[in-house]
Length: 110
Length: 113
Image (cartoon, rainbow over all chains, first blue to last red; front, top):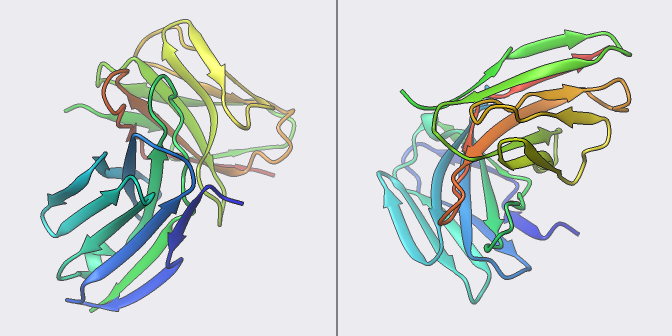
């Protein structure tokens, strides 16, 4: 069983819609990455957060460490947001390893 | 303009040949990582290095080798012992303090026939 579960696996939206992607994990963590992977394959780090909420442009990430859950929201979605979104919790301390979810494929239609 | 470069973007090899994937960073990061990505699966850690001249095996190190002779460079060799080498390979780097946020390169897609 994957320690990190993302939902939904696939999401299709119309331009302008509000998007929510969820991430649940089973072990205690210190922080969590949200990553974006475009069709070309390169990965961009969107957020690394350990508590509360972070906002960058139209993207908002929230995390509840006690409930072991994080969400990524996209407001006013645009076709250029189409990508795979990956959450990756980090257990912290001297551990260098991230655990990766399988990703959520988002398609935003014009 | 800081970042991570991987070359080449696409690589084709015949079965039985070793192949080396390049990863260079100018972010002054101490830690570097190699991941493998297969369709429908999350990224899996192959090797990581926290400092020059030191590296550790990740979850799927069999059939791979690395070196870390310079801080900026962390090449990955896919050996002929790797049973299923065709995959997308991603390199990343991070600092060694704080949240160790990782920064990723553009990846190399390796096809072995």
